[in-house]
Image (tube, rainbow, N blue to C red; front, side):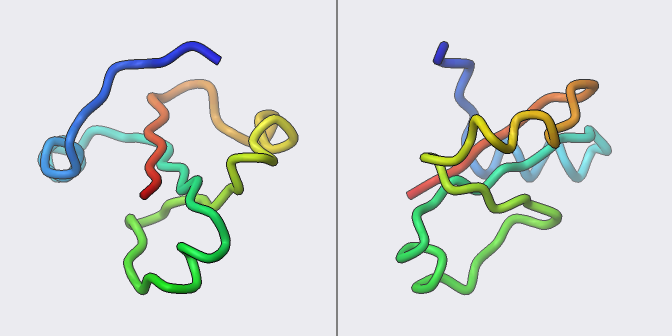
Length: 69
């Protein structure tokens, strides 16, 4: 899979506050999910090892941001 540009959490927050629309995908593993109470607003949780099966459900008309730990 090709690597895209990277942005910081602060940059994403700034851009979201400016009204940019993103699909945010949380690809953290289940252990990381369980240990964290932090979730990006409207993020879709998709295990990285299952990403391909979720691809048809991901909107293609706006930028996609993934995050992990």
